[in-house]
Length: 481
Image (cartoon, rainbow, N blue to C red; front, side, top):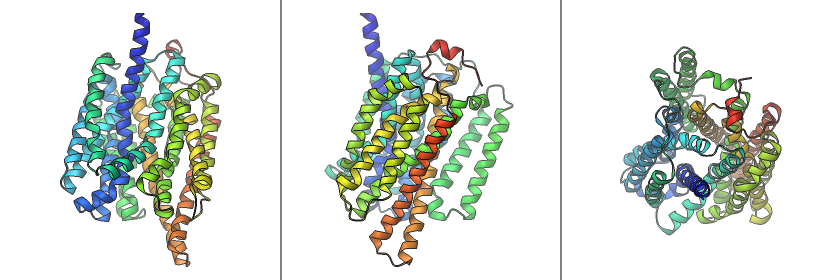
């Protein structure tokens, strides 16, 4: 009986971890639907409004690696709780913000708390579920939260903005954060630091955080100031130089923040490259399809959110059961490649959606394929990134894969929006009407998103080792190939 109760407690603990991470994922997209209301109420200019999104992305991307390593050093539950408190208080500040400056500052603090929560949540799941079959199911649930959270955010943002006002997209986090904190204390056991005794690599932490923040700042600001401007190129060059300095530091310190041997694990290295491409494709789906439905088809924010519902239901069906069974039956490589291939097909369908499109023939098929592809692929990507990693580096590996998704999404979206805008301007100059030109730009963005997903599928099929999920005994015997 005690074993049954303990097993139930672990699954309830998983739901608490997923709820905490869902808050973080939602806040990347929930704000987009409310941006027009925020601009009107607080008097943002068009150029300043983008920082309501970018301030969050900047600190979130910059502190992921450091958050993961702090979890290894000081305990995952402790860091998770600290991150939840920080994120919840920052959400309160966002909801009560009465000026542009206050909202942007609070969003930056939200990103910092979100980075800590995201970096250690996956490590807690790995430590709670050690049996291969259960771990596959648990990571399927977590994968659904990460993959579906973005589109759920679009739906929730539309509902809250229509029914209440923009403040509630942030204030809704307060009761959720309090509940997650209380349930975490009750359900998740205190853990010992896996890297206890090791010293924090201060030089590496400062350098890698500065490099990531510079890179994210250059990426998210590239559309505004120009990709070939001295400012953008200078920041990207500085980020590259700092990353080179990180490699030099990490090769020489006794307790590195980022052990370079981690990247000699083939599945880990491949999964992170796949994650960059996959995130770029996912952001094309979340953002560009929402823009197409809202600006070309004339959907309301609520209608846009509801249009994502079929894909969320399919993702839930796969992530919460079918994906785990596929991984246990076929290993990591085949489900990942098939899922990404199906997602690429879904994006390709959107690349042919007409100006006067209808939901059933022109929106729903792509949504269904993307939901199916994401549900199949996300679980194997997470396994590939975490499965071969020693326990004392689980927090770091979690931070690395989250950073890959974050950087891939930010860079991919910036590139896609730039391509879309250039194509739209070219069509307008050639005499096309405004809607046709806008839709032509979105077609190009969808086509490149499909190419990113297809490239990720081919890369995973070619380079990932076909093995399945490992248990504790197998993990102990893992060797660097």
